[in-house]
Image 1 (cartoon, rainbow, N blue to C red):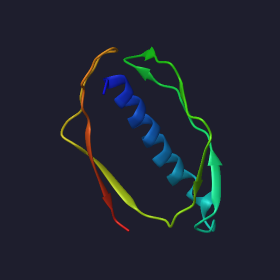
Image 2: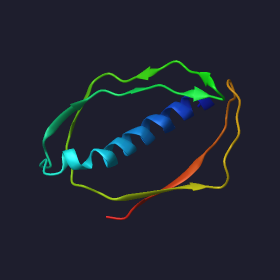
Image 3: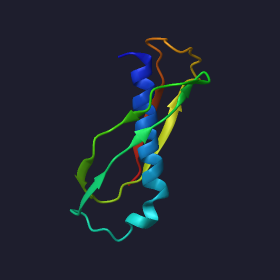
Length: 97
């Protein structure tokens, strides 16, 4: 998997986790099993160079029960340049529910 794709996935899922946390107040009281539709677009820069925005087609999902997660980076940061390949960032995700 190329580095740019890895960064895009990391940013996409990080954004989703952030939005789920920030918008938790809006989702509170939404019953598990409720159908929800959403679309996401990510714009970002690598080393100050704007990258092509990544959009996702509308997705529909069912609301599930709330879980609590802890995400922690393993090791140190990785410095990369645009066009780099095989750069790895490792994280642990722990379910604290």
